[in-house]
Every structure is written in structure tokens, then in C-alpha cells.
Length: 499
Image (cartoon, rainbow, N blue to C red; front, side):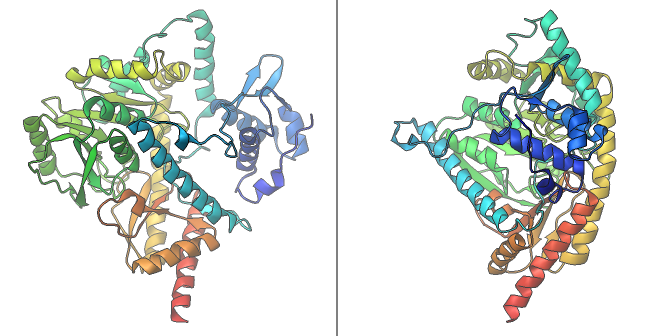
């Protein structure tokens, strides 16, 4: 079977041939054009076919290997991994005809709303196929600077040891003990939280920790507190169990919470860097919230999703570091600091929640998930590779956010009010004009092949036009071009309004 991928089409969409080859192969694998266990050409042959260097091809193969799209056999070559099959959208199966539980019905409604949003995004992209689209996405990270060789060595060593110590960690669903030690040491030195490894539970990303905690602590009809705006996944987790969300507004000092007679079970916060505005919860409000939680026997889930990257001033201490009564559950993730597809996160639990959380997690998985990746990550951290990688990313992201702020101030000040961006991987910008012009602007962005994230989806009570602009995955050239396209989109809206 001859390998064919539309490499030239991808070259026109990506700034480097390396990125073009990576995405061309990745899409071919995901679409099924390259079938499971199919042997890929050698790096020499692929380099000759597409006029690339062998180093470029080897780097792309390493990236695909790290993300489990391909695998290698010693002396045999490189092969396509067998991926989980996706559901055929043309299937006649109607999920709504099944007698689902209340939880199943709520989850299905959420997925239907997500599918509608995805189709809208696809339509927007379809209008811009004449040029490469620049998307200021959230949740994406820098891939080109990832130390792939060091990570591959850690993965290879742990894969080799798996055959020697097959049952190690086999029933520790709360995670690999070595990774817990590495996390405890890292957050003690970088986040100021003194914690024992046994207090840490490894999860498949922060969302799993949130839904497990919600299911453990809330019944149908119970109340929970969120910031407004907030991370939509937290709201859906609460609503999926029949919980009722009360969302409180956010100002420059964080959530404006006014305790009421309502009995709240949970509060979900992003105090170090409020999502999505970037506000930092003031010390006074932190102390008030901790006192409230202790008096009312409520728990606070602290989602520290990307404050690892601080661009200005010293790092903000987490709320957990002030917690003396065991009311704060601290959640962290590696999806912002490592490869975005490495779905490893962790939760630091108060003593009284450790055993219930372990039991809840075993319901979903008796055996630890991604245990080889967990061990590799522990080795990666213990060897110092992780800290060096973070230092490189901090310098890189600082340059990018400074460029973003400079260009947005220069070109978009008329319509965008920038919120402070002293940390994190995105900028939040309020809209200065009316909502009708905002809708016209979003539509114009599609024509100019640029996309920001409509922040109204994160808002609950009052919908105010705003944009979230992620930059971690974009180089300086793409950032510059993207903001110029935003400017062109706004100019077209202004011109039409004058006609």
C-alpha cells in the first residue's frame, strides 16, 4: 500500500514543514486513511518523497510516538496505532429512545449542545479555506519546544520495566506513588503547599477530579457556588447530578460572594487566576471564604489550572496554603505544562475525603489509568527535565504575552478592553461596543480566517460580549498576523455600519 498524504495542502496552512507533516500524518491516522498496524515508510524514504531532512521526519515521528499515534518495533519499523473507533454519525441508533436515568438525560443534553457548537465552528472554518486560519484557542500549548527526546527516554525505560515488574501499581487506582512524591516536592517548592504524598490522588485531568467530587458531595437539589464567568465544565458537572448553581459576579479582587441563608455544599474557585478574567482573589476575601467554609461545613474546590506561568511579580500563594481546617480541595493539571494530550492531573484532599475519593475513583477504574505515562512523568520530574522545561516555557510565554498586549493595545484598543494578564496562557478582553456590533465582528472574523473564543459561553447571569484569546500554541509571527486580521475584521464592520 503506497502512502499518500496531501502534504502540499498542509504546507500552505502551517508555518513550518515539520508542523505540516505532523498534522498531515495525524489527520490521516485519525480519519482512517492510515489504518491500524500499517507500516509507515522509513524516515529516509519519507524525507526523499517530500523533500525534507531526515531530522525533520524523525522529529515528527517522535511527536506522533509521544502522543500514541504510532508505535515502533525493534528491527521491524514504525506502525500506526489502533485508535478507539468513533461513533458513526449516520448510525440509526437513537439515544433519545433509550430509557436513560436523570443523570444520563442531563449529560446527553450537554453533549447535544456541544455538538451544535462544534458544527457552528466547522461552518466558520469552511468559509475560510482559502487561507490558513489563526485560532486563539484555549487549552493548547507550545509543542515545538517540548523536550521530546528526554520524554521518550523516560517512556521507553518505563515500558521496559513494565515487562519486568508487571503487577507493580496494578491496583493503586489513586496513582503511582513515585509521581505523588514528585508532585509533593514540586508544589512544596513552587506553590508553597506542604503536603504528604498520600494526600495526593492522581486523576485523568482536572475535570475527572471535579465530577468525582461533585458526585461524592452533592445530591439532587443541593446548591453550589461558582464564579461568574466560570469554567463551563464545572457548571455541567454540578447540573449533571441535579445540583443547583448560584453564580456570583467577579470584580478585580475575585468573586463577590455574599453569604445567604442558602446551604451550599460546594464552592468552585480559581483564586490564583480567575477563569477566564484573570482576576486574583484578594487576601481579605480568601480569609472570609475560608471562615465561611469552616462555619458552614462546606468544601471549596480550588482549580489552579495555569497560574504556574506567572509573567509579572511573584507567584500567588494558593488558597490551599491558608487552609488550616481541611476545607479546601486543591486541583492541578499537567495539560498546560506538558503535552496537552497527556491527561494527568491531581487532587490534594483533606484527610476526611481521602478514603471516599479513593472508593469513588475505583468505581470508574480499578486499575490506574496511563500508569506508564505516570511513571515516566515521575522520572521526568525527578531528573530535573520538568523544571527546565517550565523555565523555558516561562521565558517563551512571557515574550508572547508582551507581544499580544502591545499589538492589541495598538490595533484593537477601540473595541477591546484588556483585563490584567500577569499570569496564565490567555488574555481576557471585554467588548467596548454594542452586542450587535460584536456579532457582526465575530462573523467578519470568519471571513478573515481568524477566531477568538466568545466568552459569553462562560457567563451565566448577565451575558456581556467579551473575547478570550489564547496564545500559547502560536508563534510570534502567527500572533502578529492574527491580531492584524482581527483589526481588519473590525474595520470591515465599521465600514459596513457607515454605509
